[in-house]
Image (tube, rainbow, N blue to C red; front, side, top):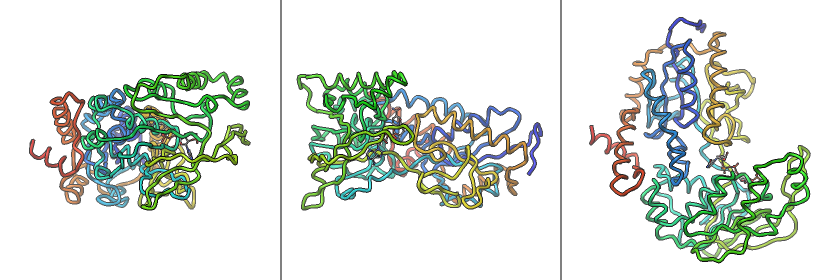
Length: 468
Ligand code: NAP
């Protein structure tokens, strides 16, 4: 199809996924005043905002206020939200090509990477992504159980997600009461017997993926001490050399913070949060009932790889760490979508700068794009998606100019609305979400909390319908 500049013809766009990347793609599209974009955003959940609702830690409310920007974008009269409408189930690629000029996938990374070591599937071994989705009230995870009667917990990985999990396990009931953590999680954590939490990094402190504000926050928990071991925070020769050369102030600061946790402190608090380095789990050991009872760890040393980065290498020193609960937090991984070319190893949609590419020919699949974690992998903070979506939208604009977009046979907004109503009569509009949002906030106000979430789809539907 050829779409020339200034024709004022509406360009119909479907965005699959309503997290930050999807919303920033909308924002960039609406800013392109030379075209009249009209956008339908789909999500398999009734509620929008992706990981801002179900990933960002409940004790990081400030970060969640970014949704005000998304509400503003959604208030554009050429924007519609279809919540509870799942791609591949209620709407297919064939449907999308029939109704839209442009299709953008912004589905994020919905699963996790595996450690691929023996014992990983023992009872009591979980992914951090499950725990995070559980405490954030994601409807698919509300019925998960985590054995919080255990006193010792290990978290494998030292990224910001691992830090979030550690904080939630170490917070007091009073601290958690100030958050929008799911009600059932608040109740379960109230009974928690967790006393010691171990964050396990496979490389050294300078290579830790967590950021400085996050690791600093671990030093300010009401009833938990963060502790490091002097010998593990001490820098190896390679790291010293690299830090001197690159003058990496952020890494220097990080080491300073971690060193401050290795000072002798009086243990007056009930919980201890051990931040460990240069160790990798090689096996999870189970008891007779098949429940995890310990992690076998190997001590690592660092070596300089061909690309100059410092990688971990196992020594022949081992240690057994008794723990009854294990979370692996070693990165998210994207999930393939029906009829969308996928790169299994990287866990992303096969794409170049957001243009989706045919896996066999490497040619652009006209009209189809990706943005966010499903495009570049699970890295960066919320704001990173703004830049990322900008790149995708730039490709879209170039392809409109050159006429390389889809030619839908039924582009009228009402035509697809009819289809959605037929396939999912209970779909949630943005107005429905705003109403649910108000209800959650008012439930929270009564208990002095930012909000009390609805965590089942049935509850959400009932709440909105009863308030019509
Ligand atoms: P991440 O930052 O990529 O961290 C993954 C961690 O897992 C790293 O420590 C990594 O170590 C380790 N790891 C990977 N494979 C491993 C293995 N086989 N054995 C042991 N350790 C292994 O991922 P994330 O924590 O899931 O976070 C995802 C993104 O969301 C990040 O960009 C993060 O900054 C962002 N996020 C931000 C916030 C915030 O701003 N507050 C909160 C949550 C998440 P190596 O470095 O050695 O590979």
